[in-house]
Amino acid sequence: MSQKEEICDPVARVPGVHEWHPSTLAELLLNGTFIDGDWVESKDQDPKGDVRLIQLADVGDGHFRNRSNRFLTKDKAYELNCTFLETGDVLVARMPEPLGRACIFPGDDKPAVTVVDVCVLRGDPSLVDQRWLMYAINAPAFRSLMEEFERGTTRKRISRKNLGLLPILVPPFQEQREIADSLDRLRAQTQSTRERLATIPTLLKKFRQSVLAAACSGQLTADWRVNLGKDDAWIESSVGHITEVCLGGTPSRKNDIYWNGKVPWVSSGEVAWQLITNTRERITEEGLANSNAKLLPKGSVLIAMIGEGKTRGQAAILGIEATTNQNVAALVPNKNIVESTFLRLWAEERYETSRSEGGGGVQEALNAKKIRAMKISLPPIEEQAEIVCRVESLFALADSIESRLAGATAQVERTTQAILAKAFRGEL
Image 1: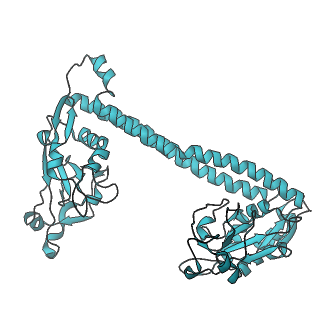
Image 2 (image 1 turned 90 degrees about the vertical axis):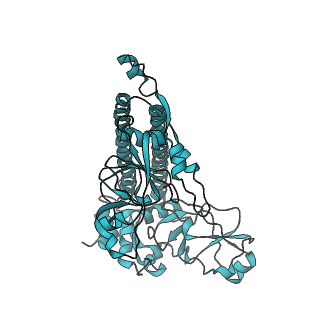
Image 3 (image 1 turned 45 degrees about the horizontal axis):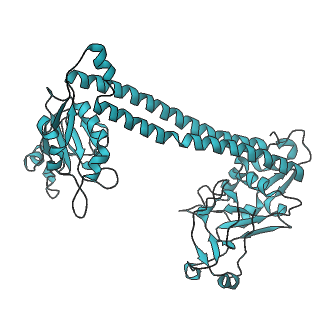
């Protein structure tokens, strides 16, 4: 039996339930409204208009997103013969993502119409529960049937005509309401779960920031010092006193003999809290000799001095010998005074401050002078090693929670789809 035949067969799909009858979407809405939105061009719109134009971006998968801010005048809407929306209409997006997603229009302060790639569904209120219809369209079985009718190369779409041909199994009206009520309750529960899960990344970010702050202030190892009877004071110093600050360079791109060699070359965009063991580009020995670049030892701490977004101020450790471009400051630590990983933790802890210290015209940047002058509180080497160990252990815990969070989030989405599938097999 094909998938389409199975959908249309109430006995096959709903064992023991013979009141459900097969239909198509168009047949179900024969006595209601089943129409595309309207072709409203940019020239027809007016930001001061008194009619809201609902966009594809407003149509979420089971929820109204309310993202757009487009309008036209009422006179223009009448001139274009627009279909005015009613509260409770089902809106179906005929373009992704995902294709065929449906939501209930909750109404608006202003009269509203919608665009041509949104289909408006309004069933006979004595025969069709609009909430049930939305859930039925979003159900995995119905959604998968759309794939046969997808058209388009760059962006997939489904026509209203083909949408209307899709089979749908229709329970009695009272059962539609019961299914919708059950799904409303279950959706509220899953939404509450999503919202709680969504708070965890912020908590983990704050946790990591607190760990770093405690690590770089001595609080994280206060008990360690007491237990071991350590009373060595932390010293206040600057980056320029405990490291050699080196800037890199870029060999001429016009000379082919300088590139595609064996010397790893790090750009500022590659500096992002990681251990660098490979680079996107490499230069030759000639390129190294004919530029300001310098071969840096393994364990050097790199700080991006330039970069849009959040790049500036990020740090990494070299796990190999490498050189850098001129937009990266390399801190070569005095190993008798400072441990590389502790230095990188310090850079991460003061990251927000480093970002704000950039200056310049077209693009803000740090510079070698500012980096050398940066202050650092430095514990003895033995305590630095203990701090690194504790931070790594706590960060590993946070990473584990993040991994579990990703699994839990995916499980919520799978559960939502499973509930929808079960509802439209008559098993809810």
